[in-house]
Image 1: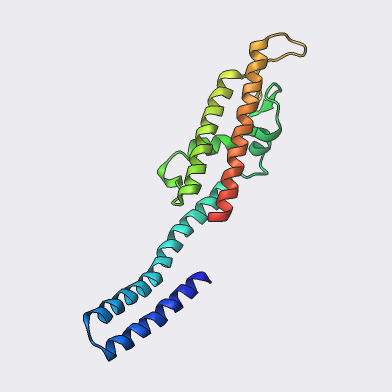
Image 2: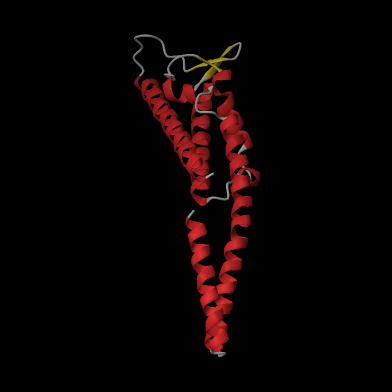
Amino acid sequence: MKSLYIKLINLFALLGAVAWLARAPDWEPAITSLVLLSTIIGLEITPSFNQSSNSHDNDLFLKFTSTFPSNGQSAMFLKDHDLGSTFHESHIEELNDFVHEWDNAEHEFQNKKVEAKRKKLLTLAQKFRGELAASTFSKGDGYFAMDIKDFEDRPEVIKKRDELNKSASEVFSAHQELVRVGRKLC
């Protein structure tokens, strides 16, 4: 709507400048008319460029939300799971897919704000995945654990669990930031 008002104002100004040029042919009304005409042309061309970049970002954002949805297993795992407990590898499958598939130019958003959020999420997710891999071991059948036993007194393991839980929460928060910004701007 705002764009329509700007176009109408420029159109009326162009008509006024052309009338001024017709009454007093001189270089000032000619330059004014040319500038206003080029502004109108620019306003007509610019939306097509913005629509193509928005189209790319819209498609990419839809792909992101289907690959790593807010209500998916990985997001819920990051939000709610205590990493001192056993978990199945399927719980982090969406997170793994995001980390492995979204670290390239094909998955970059053209909108700078959305892209900054994607990079932040990717960086935090990669760090979390590295820490998780270094701190857990396979229990077989796709299950992983830190091997914390009830009532165990190993402060370094408890500290690592707390760090992993904090890191998981940070990844979840970054994910939600990307979703919020992406919904507004894509």
